[in-house]
Image (cartoon, rainbow, N blue to C red):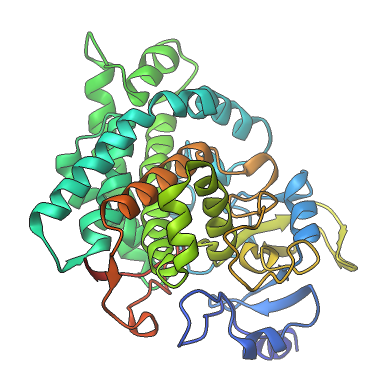
Length: 407
């Protein structure tokens, strides 16, 4: 009987409308939602509570009533993962709870403080300028994803971690597989294990070196691994997380943001003319686009009421950030992109103890990459119909797969 009831539920994840790359959920799927907290069916055959209202998402993510540990039985997965992947998550602190999560996260907190990100903004600027020089030298037309949006954050995270950018094809391909819901479990396993081996070799070379280097991995080897505070296997897991998240999210935001901004000439001009206004536009881009469209999966650790629904201990729940960021109770005319909006309440980076640790870096990269692109190529034009661009619908991080431009 339970299976029959599950079969009647809306299938999640949702897709946006075919003719609109910016709207996260098609109107037909919105109509099937039974209120702000409703059950939906998962591709794996299970189900999850879907939490869509801004206040409810914040309450869900704020405390310890929900676990982020994907190894728990009944955790809401969007694809089946082989046991060695689910259980081999050492160091991946975004999938941990409590003291272990805090122990690992605190080791990274100083690296991503706003004052430290400001100190590396000249490095980000140099990377951006070099990419713009290469774009100009190659001349139009160009695919802005492969020529700019992807290499900029990849180069930055490689500099920060101490990973050779010469290996970018290797880790970018494996990152894409790890995030692809359509990839079979064997490919996901091979991608994760391959990336762990690669980073393990790099970290071991730093550990046995007299000078591990003044990059993030080198400092963690010197300050944490050699003192016994951090195991090598844990550092490998942290490195995988930082490398994958550090380029995939920002790369997709850059491409999708350019596509959207070319639809709004006033916003494009604000990015060009006013650095302070650029910060405001970036926050609205983060809110409006919310590229983690599949939400944040969790599992209740105790009975809790969210949005008038009782979610019992052990039941799965998913915080749908994209709809929470379109909540009209928080954002006036929320389905409209407004470059003048003060959108700082958005949840694009999550909320609570698991809120994205790298958000200061992501904001800086996005602001610098967009403002300098606009100033270098003020007449940049997208040469394809936005509705026909290939989208990364099956990826955990949404974006466009290519963005043909000229200038």
